Amino acid sequence: MGRIADVHGRHPLAMGILTGTAVGACLGVLFAPRRGSETRKRMGEGVGRAKGTVGDWAHRSRGAYVATRDRVVKSAKGTSQYVKGVAEAVTNKAHREGDAALRKVSSSPSPGLSGQPRKAI
Image: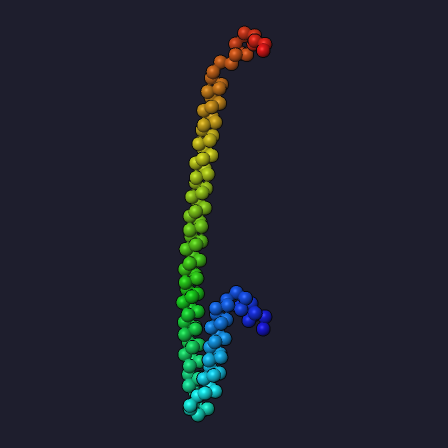
């Protein structure tokens, strides 16, 4: 019984369709112009067809889910590789620029190391 409450909370449209189908079937049986045995036979055939149709839908839905899941996983892996590549490129550029700045600073003469005293402020 708990599962029905879960479905109702998450899928109100599906629950409404199922409820409407059940009510319609009951009313159809009540007001059917045919004999009971014939009505039961026809209902059984209809239920059999409905089961087959629902099974087909479930199978196709499962296939669509698997295909979509695989595409999402593949895309996520590709995105992850792309982000890693960009991060590596940015890091390498920062290291190169940092190294160039250090070389520039170390190659220029420092006023305090030239033997001249520094001026007091």
